[in-house]
Length: 369
Ligand code: IPM
Ligand code: MG
Image (cartoon, rainbow, N blue to C red; front, side, top):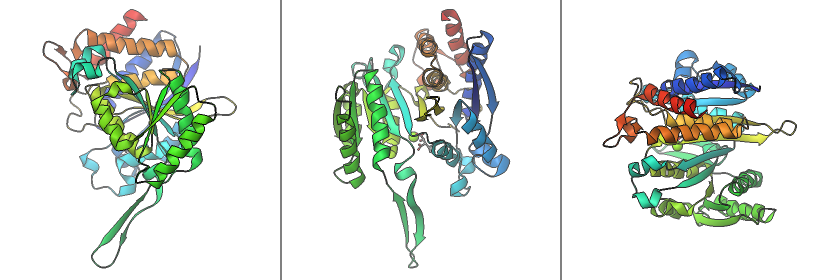
């Protein structure tokens, strides 16, 4: 039986609550000897800042680097609004992404049949939706230098963020987009703004060149990112894989998330380069949603995105594709049975809290497994 090391980073707000439900799923896999997951737990975000004045400690970074996968909850909250910029909760997540070189962020948006009416779009537009946003995660304006505010001395200040991309960064994310498309419906739409951004000109040029370099069987199209946002709410089913930069990917994935009815439904995987010798990739799995401080600690949070993120770990880190499918099916079946957390509640359905939802998914997994 394979044995894997997981680092759990529950973080802030609803993070620990939704992580609690994943822990049940992990324990279930261990109990049934399907795989052996060894877990350690660390601190990230505001909780790490409170404990040792940094958004993540070097010791927890070391644990992350040596783990087979990091399972991450959520960070942030109004309590830490006034901490120094480089120590804000989000800095912990950004350090994990950057230091582990997790450049490929997979954000699938799938509409579960039972939830098609929970979307803000009409059912026919979203029914059966299955698209994947592939977001570049370690470059662009998130990390480009300079990034600073300068005092101009005349009562004015100047703030600079830098959008920067090099050829290799665009090429490697484009390759992943084409490879993923081959396992799906074989279409990639690349989004940038080459009409106003010179980095967009290079982005489009490199994606086109990479496509010619062995991926011509995949259908490639290009769209300006603003038009892409519009098309995502006009006719989302036209898309299969969308590949885009760090900032556009942040925005477009929130839009895509809402198509599915709730931000509480969307998982994500952040992957690094494959190791030359082992073929293994460093990886972090996290829900797309944030720490939801308004409902934290009340047992109301939807754990589905977190559980589905663990399913992505089974799929992309541990080669347990069948088990990943079973977890996804268990989630769909739970929704099919009418279980709903508050964020996706509909008339006539059964409203449950975080733990009941986690138990219901586990019961479905047990029934199928
Ligand atoms: C996301 C989040 C993060 C981001 C924040 C928490 C730094 O919005 O993962 O989409 O902007 O990347
Ligand atoms: Mg975001």
